[in-house]
Length: 424
Image (cartoon, rainbow, N blue to C red; front, side, top):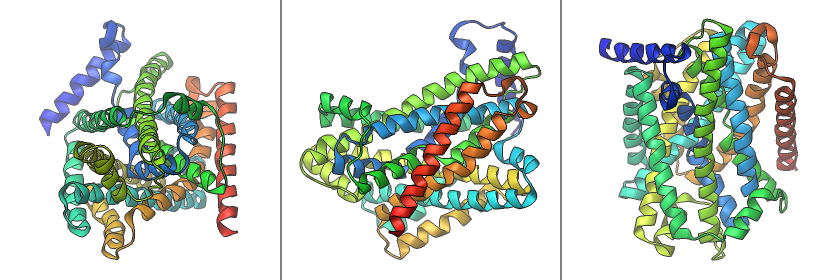
């Protein structure tokens, strides 16, 4: 443990020397890279696979603009979250506990735990499905293997944040590589791609519901809580000038990570459009998508898809467990060991698998549920980051505040519309 602590201290000193302007060039950025890459894993979990492939196969490139829009929103939201941690030395849940009445904090904690349950459902089932597709192991046994893998990733956290960041980043780039190859195989229609990317439109209620699922899978509520925790004590600024410097460097981290996450999400929909929609195939189940990748392209393509699903599921499930720990500790000042939390959160997805419920249906449903949780995290975040008493010199500018509230209103309005349509 001392070895890991000494490594952390070296990076902290390196960052401090940068704040003192003793370091020039690319080395100025490197010590600040990492937190956003952990948060970005939440943006490419197996729920994204399910919603993006379903949207691409049914509507072609029609909803590609939703991914672009969601990614821009994610960039702004994660910036606010990181800034809150840097400015206050506290995470979003901790600030909410201090600022809100106790009943409100408890309500937000309960809601946050429900979000974590929906998140973990998607991530754990996705990892188990990836093992099943790649190796033919029955889903129930595959879920137990996925459990062991998620524990191994959590062990990286015990070794220090740099080990965790390195491991998560490596997994992220494996998923990137798999979809770069898939894009090459799929040969998408470039003109249709750009039309879908920059032309906002829907095609009936089902497309709106799928768009909400994409939004819920991309702008993840638990990532909003987690990012503030990742930056709150990682590199501590002692003056307003240092805090502003730290935030500028962290924004670069966020920009890179969100670009990567956006590329992966877009690639999922594009590949689905180019392969499935083009051939008149509406694919809702990931196991069927795996089969069609092998049939329409090659076994290598199917293997890459399964590998990406497995890695995304394993890494994002561990990030979800970390987020649950942040939410519980922040709102009610209570913490349980990460491994105990991991065991508890594995029970619902294993039960769903054991009961024979369609895993992809569960994935898509979880993403729509997640979209309802965004407002409960986003509204307090905007309130706090727009308050000078809390943020000091890092308080939001007026135009950031206006844009943030517009985003929150759009998200909440979309969710209310979907709720009404669902009951009708």
